[in-house]
Length: 448
Image 1 (tube, rainbow, N blue to C red):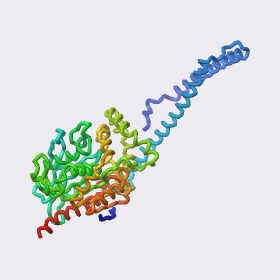
Image 2: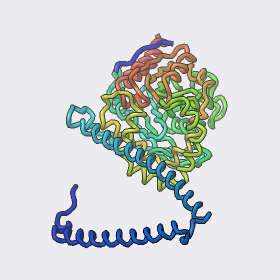
Image 3: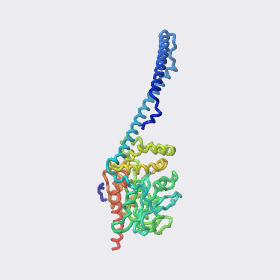
């Protein structure tokens, strides 16, 4: 295993009352208040006199219980009010921070401010999954290119998460060849169709990837797979179900084409970015371990509850975009100089994923375990990229993958979070270029 470090307003005045009207109302209010106070004082004096003389009524048990309940209610309301006040203060601070962050665009250069995020499009193709779900696929580059790279995006995102790689890899390789690139939206994400709850699993996304390969690559043609986060897990699921794709086709196909047939493609390289082979249940999101022990058991049921109120929750997510910006910046990125435009772009992708889809896939992510499939993945050259401050799939997960693959190269960017393709795109693109150059040279060396 080789290891390296990556471098990285005010209301309308005409609707306000005049001074004369205000002073008249004030005088009337003053007289009424004085009269009211006098009446209340008189009643209180009479009641007190009657009580002292023993003639007035004494409070009964019902009244005492009522007073006790009132006291408890006030205490509860006080606590609730304090919590609500803290929440309101937190939201207010978050909104203020977000506006400050976006405002920095005016104070310092933002090279990404004019970047056309989400506008790079390829030749569209609809691929039907084995359960009938339509998968949205786009293809860039010539069909006669010597190599195809298939990009698999992460949880709650879509194919546009590979924006920089799509832009920068459109040029020729170091050998002068054009690449053919395939981007696809995972089921229930982006432009792809919605799947059933029972099929919101990593194994199913691996099967979906197999169908994408069948539809977009010539039989036996070389392919490099690139996966970010859940996309990397989909690649592991593919290797688990179809190891024949990773061994050079030595054992033929076990797929629909029949045993012994040429495989749908030859996977010749794999790029794994911010992903994990398993043990996701130990994820802490950067929170104290004691707090996560409380949060972890209730998270699935809480998400299912939100999923059942999807329309209401998604409307609320739209209204809370300012707060979402701050949370996205904190949870997904580590670089304090990250462009606010990039953060906005990522937050919009996440917000476009329905809450019920997020809830459906969560259990499969937490239960993901494809460590055994890494042996198959390791049959080809692998590059593993990890963020040193990744809160979702910590760098330790990337190191475990690399340690299980003797021929893997590990690149860890210490000051990076969970979305390396957007936070440090040069590291990801450069690593992919090196992998492509390597796999293109190997057949030449074998032929020599």
